[in-house]
Image (cartoon, rainbow, N blue to C red):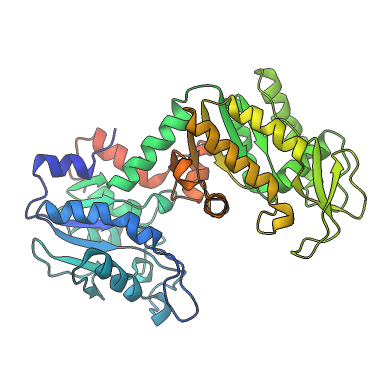
Length: 405
């Protein structure tokens, strides 16, 4: 159970209060510093509007890029974010620099606080910095699910010492969606995990094997599972030294009556590029000089049946090199299958940058139940690892929000 900003707003507990919101405004920018995608800024606005409408003095901060602590540079500034936020809100959004020692702000005002990762001690979750940040506000709001897996001063430390600490609407929605999909799912529960390497998602695969009814794997991960089942994969991206780990996953699934459908046919090429010549082969007929870059139509049809049977679907990662049209069909058909299952009543949640990019490319975004804004946080939740920024809010809720320290 976590206290939410919405609950405080409904109680009238925000009027006249100083509210500090940690958002995720880490937007992509081009070489000239112009924002190329404002999705995260738009996602941050409901919390900001809620606090302003409730009569609070609102401070918002975020990280942007990878700044060096104590060494601010123009490329690290949130100035472009402030300008875009002002356009979206239709009001001025002043940018405050050197704000750690104090911010002058009054009810009804909004200020964007410069890149929080420039502050010394932010990444180390410094207690000294955290206490100073907590002194700036009456209410701390975490609305940055994308950084919930990191214990930093603005995501974790400040929540320990602020008079009140709560979740913003975006963070609350993420936790509700993930809980519905993974902690209390309708079954069958189907998980789709794509990606280049088993090694980067080993813990995730192991945890999912214990939870799901069907596990679909794609990309280089599927190639390593093919090796585990005795298939030859040519020059495909794979990790032979992790075959034994894949075997463990297969055994865990089999012991509980769950399945992992391997590709029946694949699309291969001798190089991974947009100009590569694609060849359709049976999964047991990959040549030594070939790479598996997508699944074939027979595999797509088999996976469609698996997905169609699912009541809850979790998706992270493409099935192949969907960026190139010759190797995009498998992921395209997968996206359509998830959309179709959702339309007939399944609950679907997708997360991860490549997954969301594929969803946008194939135009099925409106048909997905929920698209998570978190990459690493999404994966760590599914892996069963505690998210520090969420855990501290849960601790504060259990403690009755009494001030610590």
